[in-house]
Amino acid sequence: MTTNSGYFIVVEGLDGSGKTEMSRRLAQALREELGAEKVLLTCEPHLDSAAGGFLRAALGHRVRPLQSWTLALAFAANRADHTARVIAPFLAAGSRQVVICDRYYLSSLVNQSNEDASPAEVMALNRQARRPHLILFLNASNETCYRRMDSREKDPEMFEDQLDELREKYVACIDFLRVQGETVEIVDADAGIPVVLENMLEQVRKTRAI
Image (tube, one colour):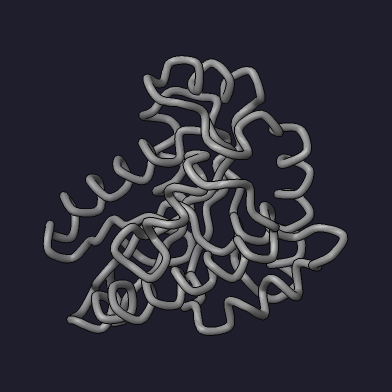
């Protein structure tokens, strides 16, 4: 990168879109280019931040079902703590620092907004969260998502059986964020890993010189 300021990337997508694997691949590619100490890969909910263990239990169906507003508050607290104690310090630690986060507040807008809480209201809870320089939405077909989820050796998490509804909400919430001036780029995630990775890197290069 040709700038001295930090750069914050968020990777989002439906369950099964490959976002966790592709976040890891993107981090690896940038570490090879910038140095291992310059790139931090993290995720949300962040286990070591406020309410992290509770949120992991909720997503794994290990606590009773919760109201969307309760989850929105818990995610916002987790994100504010994650931002303050992990993301912001890493970005400020030196020149050319990069943070890649697997899920961020776009997921909260999609999963916690409903007839009782608008995207604007959920977003207001996240006012302490650092704004990403770039959000990459990995757009995989339902067929691809279900095939990848079927290959996992773990119990399905909350939201995995609602792909059509969630896809529509992602489109609406991406539009909402773009109106707020945020940079959200959609990446075709049905292709093989090398192609998806190159497309992600291309979007990063468009917004930041590498």
